[in-house]
Amino acid sequence: MEDVAIDGSSSSTSGGGTGAQKPRRSRRVRMTGAERREQLLDIGRTLFAAKGFEGTSVEEIAAKAGVSKPVVYEHFGGKEGLYAVVVDREMRQLLDGVTGALTAGHPRELLEQAAFALLDYIENYTDGFRILVRDSPVAQSTGTFASLISDIATQVEDILGLEFKARGFDPKLAPLYAQALVGMVALTGQWWLDVRKPRKAEVAAHLVNLAWHGLDGMEQKPRLIGHRKN
Image (cartoon, rainbow, N blue to C red):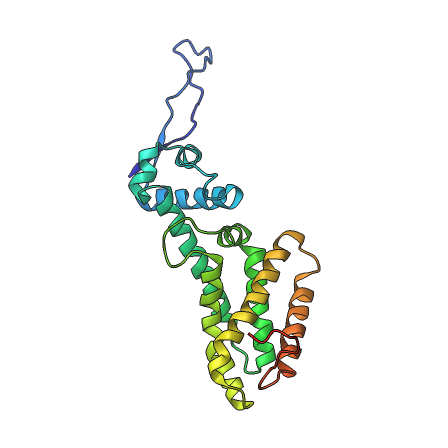
């Protein structure tokens, strides 16, 4: 258990009934290790979103939490460990949102659901998305915007592969198109993060318009029309 000081003062009368006030000692509310961990994660998430990894210090995190630096090291081993947990949570939140949204049977509606899932995340978890679109300084296979796009694209590869096969296209190319489609939506979402115009539904409609009609007119064997061939 960890202690947290809280402000406390109350009036007490002296023996003569004069109503004189005496300051009362501050009480300390005990915070469990789990509660402290969540507090540090919330503070770290806010600071990383506002200042980035390099701009955030362990000293600032500890000060915001009202604890000493060793407490941060005890829970996460340092700033890198805290950052890695924050990124992992945000990745899972977004991936779960996208995969959970893909429930329709019609491919065009699936595109709509994927676009809305990302835009919903940006709108509801803005700090998390700001963290994800920064390059991660942590040496790991996940935690970068590129790896996030790749993970989401993997979720739609099978869907595209089935559609390709049904339409006479090479299903082996589904991963390439999945990356292209998800990347288009993700980068548009990154732009929309700051401008927030037009409204979300309109952004989703235009994204699907471009993606769907692009797929609808797709050639089985596309050719380059310029002079460069390799």
